[in-house]
Image (tube, rainbow, N blue to C red):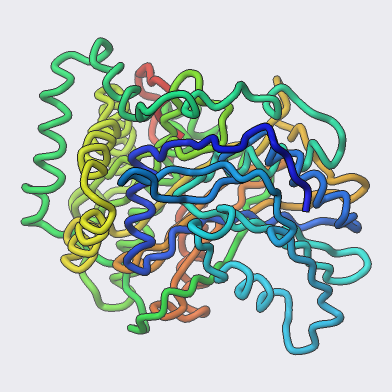
Length: 474
């Protein structure tokens, strides 16, 4: 153990999104995110352990335990940094497991944030040359972007090459009881006409009117109840990715618009292949909120958008892409994602047990849960002014690829996470093996990659540019 005494008795309050993720966890819906780094070369495990300790000293949330104090939940900062967050496996000493089996076992080890820190790390030695470094995070503590920021901090401490991002200001919430996401949502009023009316209108439509037209489910070939999570990843190489980016730029759309439109087409085609009609398809899109003053702090700073399409929208891929772009711009300009922050905030005023029952209701009815989740974390650790990553190795070990994903909610059964590292676009499906066979999930992801490729030759003509506030979208 490595102990410190400077933070004894201090705590960090939970924001509204933290509490909602804890409520999900309370009804046995695992709220986890993960990152997998495949490496060429060995990792010094003792040096890595010390790097984790050093990063935890800076990012205090990663060394907290959730406790109840005066009828409210808080994250209490621990003095002792624990060795058990890091596990080391040698595949040669595990004759009954293979690489995929090790990933499956590690990712499905539940994290109890009331008893342990909200993350774990695994060093897996596959052979003398191939190693992997894996992290699992409890989603009540970190979203995907902040999880990658923490991993970067660990690697920079390991390499003894600290950037400014690894020296964030002290977490202001230690001295405040305010919810930073709710405060940020309120600050948007001056930037949007009729702001509160738009927030209320969207919530009314989302939770009342749309209940009469529930979303289509993605076809799955199994019906088990297990909450275990599997994963499968594909990569689009740099040359193909550059073609996609160039095509979207000339057409006046964003790469995210193309990836979203391709997903609608994929779900529609997938269901038709299995004899299932698709009416409304709703996609959940996590949104990076990043309030000013918190952007370099490891935490949860996300809400989401929900965008829908009907069969007539998907009849023509080019028309669908234009609709997706228009909807994304409109939702961003009107701060639509902030309406859910209001919903989370007022829900979080109830005791956690009531919040958990509300989550149970939303999942049992299935009406309010979207068809599928798609999130793009964007470039991983980009070098300023370059497409190259700022970090390419862990000591003498070279980082070959980075993949990861986020939680899978039961009615969906799968989610898709994208991220770019060293010019490669990683596309990872996290899924419930109880709902999808490995063969089906591979076929689904192959179909999605195929649909993305088809847009390379069918992009629309350039459209008038519309300014978008990138601070509120991923």
